[in-house]
View 1 (cartoon, rainbow, N blue to C red):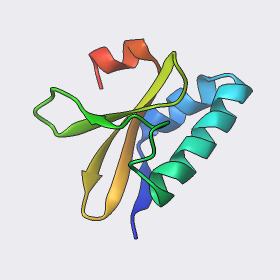
View 2 (cartoon, rainbow, N blue to C red):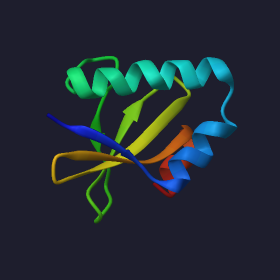
View 3 (spheres, rainbow, N blue to C red):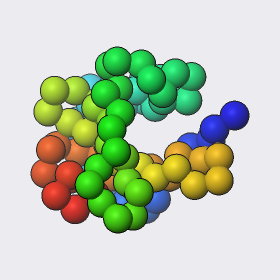
View 4 (cartoon, rainbow, N blue to C red):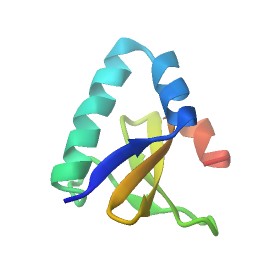
Length: 86
């Protein structure tokens, strides 16, 4: 069973987001744990040498993560701008 681990950057990003986006993130993270292939997540590997993945929160918001030893390491959350420096 995969687990979620949160970086300081992710926690900082999360706290800055509007409440309705945070609620959607919570739902998407539950989905990531239960069904990572769910179409609403739109999970895809980024072109980054550090093996970083991105997932969809809404049409305008994304989260980034790495998969390390049975854990999703949540890196960032926010608008598409976060994808420039995942």
